[in-house]
Length: 382
Image (cartoon, rainbow, N blue to C red; front, side, top):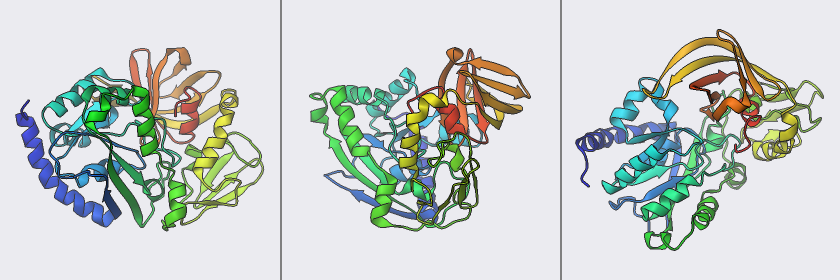
């Protein structure tokens, strides 16, 4: 298949924008690009590019040094607000997908891009890591690889999380990330591998723990308010095991129940608490998932009605979101009681955007606090 007129127009715009993006990323932070095992960044033959998702700018950095701009799978919610909607639809090679779900249309669009000669780029976690460790990887990506029968390239990203943690409200300086590309499955190997074997290879090659990487490189990321936002991922005190008693201010995290106090240093580690990093702390608190269901969680929020057909959204007002007894209760500008049996596809996008489909509606709820707690009472994947 030949490139369409729209493909050619986007290729032209992207060739110009890429030069400005390189300048922007150069001043934003240090980036190291390594190409291993015969991968040629100038290659014209299509391939599947997979990358772990450490921070928001991965979507810029990962394809930035490639000769041919790949089609990238992007969260459908990013298409609902201008001017980003225009850029994604009219400038970038972007294909919308609902996070956390299998999307037949997305797969067809990706196959079409490959047939027209383009590489495709997928972040198979479907979400940016909240704690600094590679997250659950969706198996639907492996089924697509099996169908395409082309080279699979991995880009392992290291350092991005601590440069700009997803939960953080305070900015870090001296951003730094390392991008290592290599062919992990040749096109001639794909046909002989099962979906499970492909999944094992991809998980192994994309696994990253940013704190383990930081112990090797020890790069400082100074800034103000380095702890603020931690309560959006950490919700159980490791000292007294109390729920919902953590708060942050400046560089410090506090427990109101036992008065424990920790400090986030310039290297991103937490001083003064049982765990010095969010990976170990978060993995530890997952053992309390069943107990979390018995808690009451409450936060101020704002709510939007999302139209998935024309990719638009309408602000409905400010509300309070409450979890209690396997249901979400919204009160304020609108009032809703949403039992879990009637909710589909719960997912968090960006830092604190909680998306749920309730009956025939898609709601985007911007939660002020405890967004991970709200997500984990209704699902156990993330």
